[in-house]
Amino acid sequence: MVRVERDSSATPRIRVIVGQVSDPSEAESSHVIAELAQAVPVLRAVLDEHIDPHDEVLPYVVFADFRRALEDLIDAGDEESVTAFLDVIERWSGSRSDPAHAYDGAARNMIAVAFLEDGLILSGGRESRLLNSLRRRFGPQTLELLAQTEANNARAVATWRARSGD
Image (cartoon, rainbow, N blue to C red; front, side, top):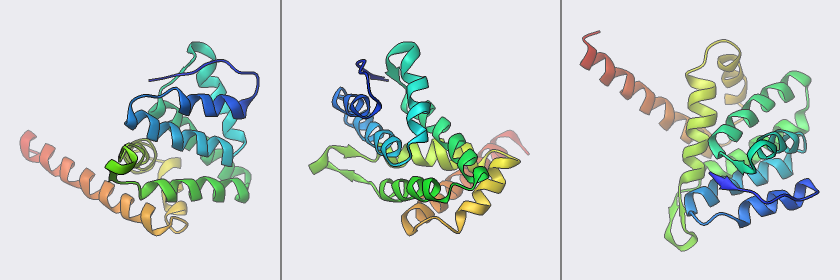
């Protein structure tokens, strides 16, 4: 959870989110959220909806709502915003543990879980179609993360089936 201080404009509020985080994994996730909200202006309203009730942000929940907003941007044909969103995802999909930067791969994990796995791989219907349409637009780092996420899910399903007798 990330505490947020009130501010009158969206952009400084985004900076405050990043500035208030002491846990490196939350800081990394908050950087992704802030970068997305700056790159894709419609996401600022989504972020505000999360901040307003409790003055805090739950990064994975916000990120899942960002994914749903991406679906709407695709449906609306807003190619500029979709490209900006995917560019941010590509940059952070390659983030790995780096002691020099206090990053622990939290952004990469959030993208894998809240964007690729929960929203695109495990969901049916609209989200599956979304994954199929986005796969060709992903950069190499996002494609690598997607392949790892799909493989992890396949192993988890196989393990569950073996244990349950299916």
